[in-house]
Image 1: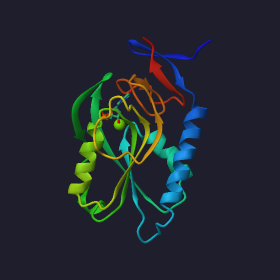
Image 2 (image 1 turned 60 degrees about the vertical axis):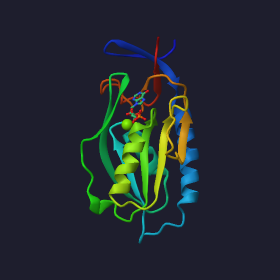
Image 3 (image 1 turned 180 degrees about the vertical axis):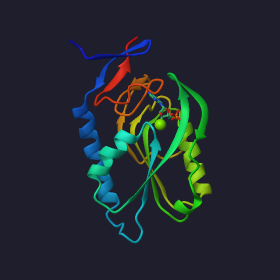
Length: 184
Ligand code: IMP
Ligand code: MG
């Protein structure tokens, strides 16, 4: 029988099994290890995880990345239920000292409208970051129309609402190893 989960009023069916997610992360990590191999202990990039959704992706990346890096996290919110509010809020204001002159790798769970990534990039530029790279586990290319370059995207998906592997529906469903899609 097909794997399904229920979160409050909604049912979700299996969409991307963990084995496929891991394979996609392996590939992204291999590209990053090549591109960031010239970084040394004296100028490590800052890997910046957006909370909460990107925690699982960031953890899987951390296991695979072999160049020196610092790890930081920042909490952003924009979704309510299954819809983007369009307004992105930074709940933990980042410190300027952490980013001035630093190269930053932003780790996102999913890029949808791109409001989050645009807001975050502007914020990091204001904080004096040098180069800003973006990695996202997932991208909805049908929705994303912004100019910010997404350097390392693990998987592209259609415009459907998904949960699992860190992504939530009303804060639920983050703790699954597979990704599920709304069963409508
Ligand atoms: P954006 O600002 O519209 O690009 O959306 C980014 C954020 O919205 C992501 O980091 C997620 O937290 C959330 N989000 C977007 N699409 C989904 C989805 O299909 N399921 C769960 N969360 C989503
Ligand atoms: Mg997010």
